[in-house]
Image 1: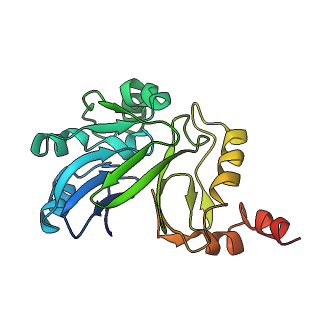
Image 2 (image 1 turned 30 degrees about the vertical axis):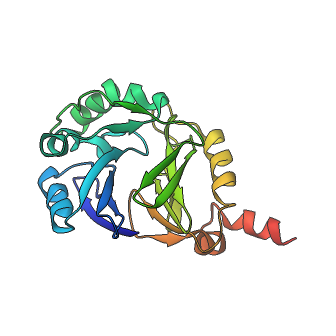
Image 3 (image 1 turned 180 degrees about the vertical axis):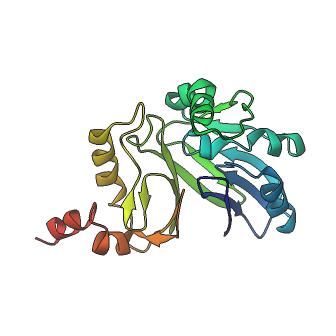
Length: 214
């Protein structure tokens, strides 16, 4: 499995392309802006795009969906609890921040906890991890997590936004921290990291690591 990335838009959001190198099948995760650059990433990899997967529906994660779908007619996967953002709240946020907005067409495939999604021979399991957003999910495969804005290198996603829930975030981090320590985490912003690195150094997780060692 190859994970390529383009950092896009005013919010420096990471859009990922997960490619099964044996088959060339691929999915895009969170195409947030700069549609032309994202399409170039797919073409440069020689990938056959099968779907768009969304970790959540904040404006910086969905803004290039229409541009991508104009070239690749693929389904969009989203947890239903994030439909308020997808359908109207992200447009309002774009207006508030003064950034251009292209309202995406309706999401076509609902996600749920425990769903299994495949990219070639690799299977990803959907983990519902609300807190930053009510329908936030991560896509987890052996050794890899595409985690959106749940966990960053040294930090976590904001919980002061509309529909965010700090108590749900704490529970989601508790679950996420039980993934194998070698798991590579590809976040929605900033550099990649690992579960083990964050357990050791992230102030939001390091207390959990100390508790587990007792």
